[in-house]
Image (tube, rainbow, N blue to C red; front, side, top):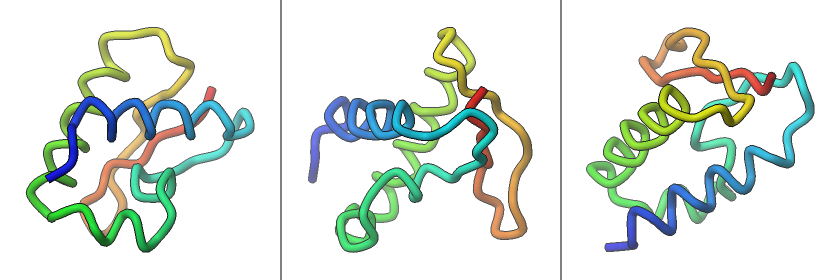
Length: 77
């Protein structure tokens, strides 16, 4: 089990590398094999933490909609 704060910090740090206008899922912020190593329950928790952080802070990330798979989509503003 990885530390949730570390995972959240990684996601937020990687989001800074995106260009304005790019849409993304949280899993896009991790290398595929790293994302797959995070247990499903932790990925769900990370998604909730990321969404809360984005809604409560001015981090130039906008919540847009949920994709076909039910995953929250974001937009770098």
